[in-house]
Image (cartoon, rainbow, N blue to C red; front, side, top):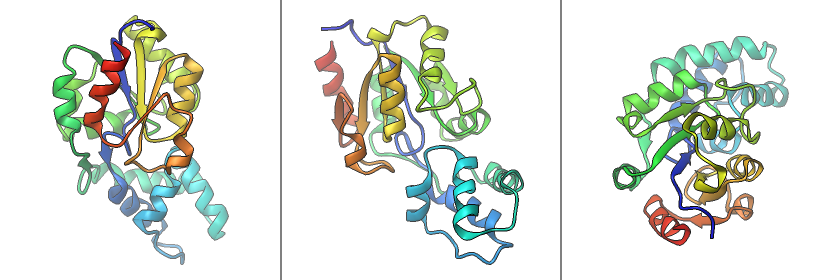
Length: 217
């Protein structure tokens, strides 16, 4: 057995919160002036994960939109910043789980910008649970790079053997594995189960994290 777990790193979108409606609204606002079909929430869910610039870049290519990625990202951010939690909800069992984990160090690593990640967690009353919040622009690379995970480990002085990452995406699993920490995939988020098979543990709801921690202790 490894060391007992001291640090739990969480992904944000699709793991702690369901932000898909607010992201979809902001993308549709940015694309509004162009004659492209409105994106459904389901389409947006299939596209999120790598960060907004990547998502909008994909759309420009697919729809042949005559606009610059940076401009559209700016339009998206203007709208999204003002509507971060209009429809965003915390997944069932998440707050209760965070209450139970008071003895652990906790972090969030998101591929959303740091300022937005912090604001959302504040608005939903979750930021107080976290020792550190890392976004796509906190360090030079984002997930699936191990850099954000290494940044958190070093900031909190915790060895990889004592940390786990919980997320809904293959990016979370790859980042965790590359950084040498244990990985836990949640099945209720934005990514299909077949992309999560490489995780050390797979859970169907946040309360099941209790069992994982028991097995690792």
